[in-house]
Length: 210
Image (cartoon, rainbow, N blue to C red; front, side, top):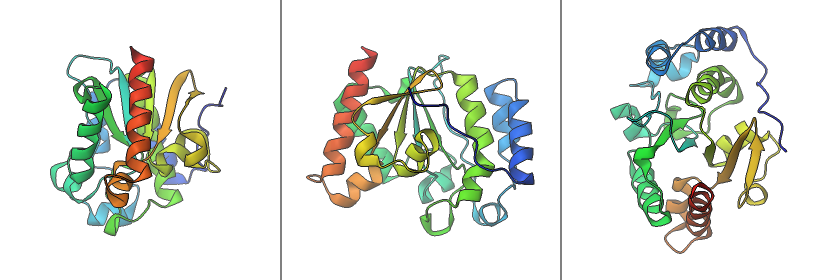
């Protein structure tokens, strides 16, 4: 059994986010509280939208997809995974037998980092309160962590994606599957290992939910 995700070391801004998020009674309240967040000044100054995430219309999701942070298209639209990575993710979900409409789609960090850089540790810490409360409210049985940043959030900072993927990890009573981010699958091409691994992992998730 994997231990529950440990809270990153908090500064005052992170503590304030955690306090506000923990008090949110439902998804709508939390989303409204997150949209004006300025806990990370650099991200708040350059973003267009806080990308809170999307949830199924019909209540509790069958599974949750958690990426790293919004990209350019996500920042423009305010919706997660709607750019090239999102298009490939939708395709591979369908091939695996999963329906995105039954999933919640979230990110570890809700604002686009400048130049699509990897989120910094303080940014992850400050945004963690939102994600933690989202998971509490949604209570998904299965989480798919897309990419190393997401995998580390759930499994710890020493996580090696190639070693962690391919099986479920029990984290806080949930089955967490760590796998490649769709952007890696795009970067390495249609015949690359990340695309094949991502599809294999999503297929395993589908089988676990059957």
